[in-house]
Length: 348
Image (cartoon, rainbow, N blue to C red):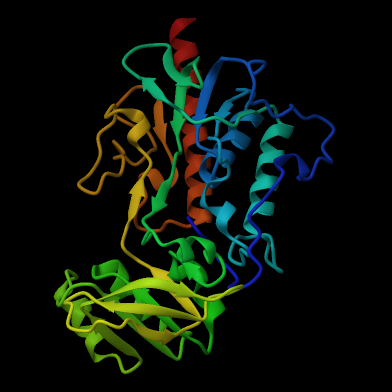
């Protein structure tokens, strides 16, 4: 989930140990065999959902283990400036925000394991998770593995990500006031993003590789009628131009009738071709919807498996914001805490 990027000044690297360490008690981050392998609660994922869950669970005395991946922090690690997360009136860099969340979780007794999850076994108690050839066991698990934006696969797109290239108009549109931008995609999401960006951009170029959209008719009508949206059908972005920030894109004609790519001067590129929920590690243990997102069983965060809870973008394909993911993490931790307490009471 990206939550607001400045077209210039992308900060890609972070030392998670550099966060606010003013708290008097802190557990050291562990990515080695010294980390414990058993806990009452395991949290899979270290984005806003996972770390908020860790904060709440640790404060409840559950001492959770967070298996956060080799690239911890979630999509906010690719975000330069976040201006819409409450509590930061001047904004905050995405990596800095995640470092503060992590330090807060560690302060209360969470253990961080910066390794990927290889597989899980949720068929019986204790619930089991394997990571880097080690087995972790717990009574409860919170799945907060997030979702990853689908990209075009261009080297220049990757290089300029956070410098004018984005996958979230709601997050980043504000930064493109008075500029022309490109949106790539042909579904409802792409058309919604294009319409949203007209609030800020002087012109929105909507690029789709086919001759017709797959969006709903009402969305197509709105886009076609908007005076500040220009359609580029049968076109695809083949290059993003710019050294320190996005300056233009090259469009290729997918029909082959034009041999020379067209150069389109824009300040931003928004890729809206979908997201992929990070569920492969579960091996089909939990049900998913038609788009591959995990499904909740009720108005809580509980899954269909007793003791397994779900939080954040791995199930939420509507909002995909850091603050909503954090709220989900809070709910999941509270649900897990109550479930564990009821389990204890039933055994006493």
